[in-house]
Amino acid sequence: MTFDYFMYKGIRFTVQFHSEEILRFIENEFHVLDDDIYNVTYHKSGTHWMGEILNLIKHRGDPTECNTVPVLRRTAWYEANTSISNVENLESPRIITSHVPLHIFTKTAFQSKAKVIYTMRNPKDIFVSLIYFNRMLKCYKETKFQDFLEDFLHGNVLYGSWFDHVKGWMQMAGNENFFYITYEELKQDLRGSVMRICKFLGKELNDEEIDSVVKHSSFDAMKENKMSNGILFPEELLDNTKGSLIRKGICGDWKNHFTVAQSEFFDQVYQEKMKDVNVKFPWEE
Ligand code: A3P
Image (cartoon, rainbow, N blue to C red; front, side, top):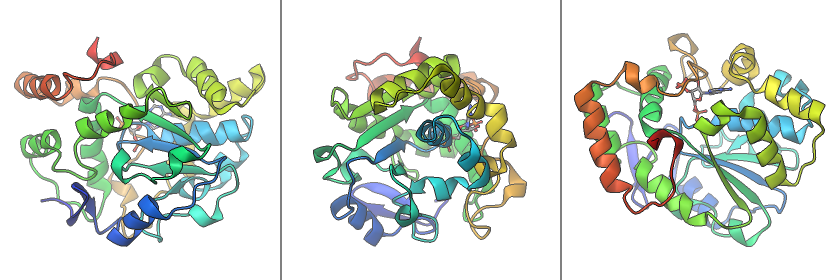
C-alpha cells in the first residue's frame, strides 16, 4: 500500500483527493451542461497537455488565460475533493478534467450534447511518469519499482487498471460526442491533432489561431508557464521542489527505466489483457 486507499465500485481512490460522497455525486447527480467539454484520461496520459490545448482552442489561440490563471482554476478536476476541484467557478464552455473509469462517470453525460475527449498513452510511459509524479505527492510512500510494476499491471493502484480504463472508455468509440486520441499522435503531429480536435468540437479557427494553439501548448511553452507547471495542488498535498509535472514529455522514456525482463513481463500481461481490443495503438507498432 502506498496511498491511503478506499474502494469505490471496484476502483482504488485515495482519501487525500477523493471521497465516496463526491464520487457518488458526480456519478449520479452532477449536472452536465450541453456545451461542457470533458477531458478524460487515465492519469499521466497527457491530461494537462490536452487541458491546455482545449483552453487555447476555447480562446481562439489567445494565451492570456493560460498564462495568468492556474491550471486547476481554468479547468476543473471534477471527482476531486472540493479543496482541489473548481467546477462552480468555470466559465462556459466548461472544460472538466476526469480520470474516472466509464462506469463511474456521470451517467447522464451521454444523454446530453456534452463532448468527451479521451486521451491515451503508452502504459509503460504512464508507469514511469507516475513514479516521478508520485514522488512529488506528500501523501505517497514510494515502493520498489518491481512491486509497483506488479501493482500497476494488476490494477492495484489509484484509478485501478489502465487496461480496464481503456477498454471501458473505448466502448464509447463511434458515439458522435466521443473523440479519442493518443499522446503519441499529439507528439507526432500537434497541429494536425489540434485541427482534428477543433473539428470534433465544431470550432473553426483560422491558421494563425491554430498556430498560436500549437505554440502555446508546446512542451517548452508549458514547462516555462508557471500557471501550467508550477501551481497545481495546494502545498499540503504536493512538494514542487521534488520534481515537475511537465517533466520530460517524450515517447519511450520507459526504455530508460525498464529491464528487458520487466519489459517482457509487461508485454505478456498487455497482450493477454488487450487481446480483444481491435484498435491498433501507436505504441504497438
Ligand atoms: P512525463 O512524466 O513522461 O514527462 P498528466 O497531465 O496526465 O498528469 O501527464 C503528465 C505527462 O504529460 C508528463 O509526462 C508531462 O511531461 C507530459 N506533458 C505535459 N505537457 C506536455 C506537452 N506540452 N508536451 C509533451 N508532454 C507533455
